[in-house]
Image (cartoon, rainbow, N blue to C red; front, side):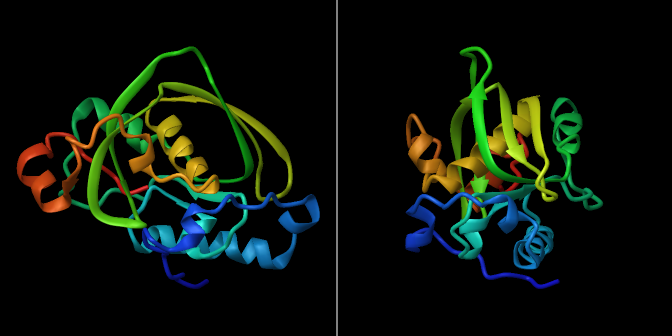
Length: 190
């Protein structure tokens, strides 16, 4: 496996709509290797999700899941279970449908926008339909942090960055200031 270079905000690949993958593409050694490398890259940079465009591959694919917590990393008790429950997944050609109209605003970060945080509104609960890495069609109903991660990563496949979803830039902060003034809530890079 390889650690891939992460595209940073300003690179055109992050603003382009990624192309869907066919069934034969999904099972190809090239895409299977890309998935493995994306998981490795996500772990290396301590992310919770990583979309293919973020590693310069303009295809509709993302990986997500929570790496084991480091010793000494603090989380609010109510958030800890939610964040630790994000399953490892590789989703291909995802389609999201919000369940209900409830939206929740919470902190997000992004490996392509290092050291910046902001509060982003997202649907509390969604249904996602996609293909897994074997090409099997799957459907999941998820809520909370898992729903947030899936929405964030799917946005990357449409050329959307979390800034684009913010209702106000008042919460926009550098990571150092976040730690000093806002860190009562943990933020994991997506």
